[in-house]
Amino acid sequence: MVVLDASVILKWFIEENDSEKARAILNRYIKGDFIIVVPDFLLYEVANVLKYSGAFSEKEVTEAITSLYDLEIKIISSLPDVIKTMIKLSFQKGITSYDAIYLALAMELQVPLITADVRLSHKINDIKYVKLLKDFAIPE
Image 1: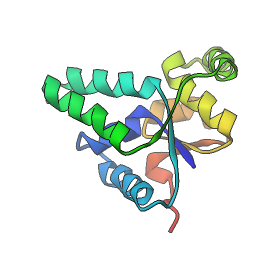
Image 2: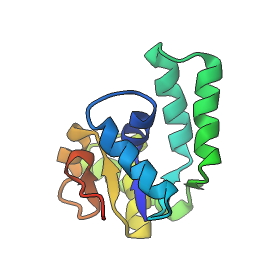
Image 3: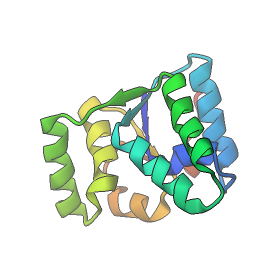
């Protein structure tokens, strides 16, 4: 089981550095090799980035979000304990609540958080759950 943040999942839709690696994680998930968990906030974040990228129509953004539901990724609504941890992390680490929600969920589940956000990873790299996408070894 892994938590993916929006910086990884967006690479499924937008060609960027490490998009191939992000899609390899998706392919391993589809094969049933592991479970992907995300906070429900991810849906808003992905939709917003796709919209403002200028490369996607309303229909394409809707299809992208629908595809995430179709994949049956575990989408978790934020629980009070996760929200409390999110707030604590955002203050302690100087990160946005938007970024902290992914880490709080990973900590609650005690699973890796995979992010492609290098600046974020530098701020939270002392937390054992954080894995940078470019360094993440996809299990064979």
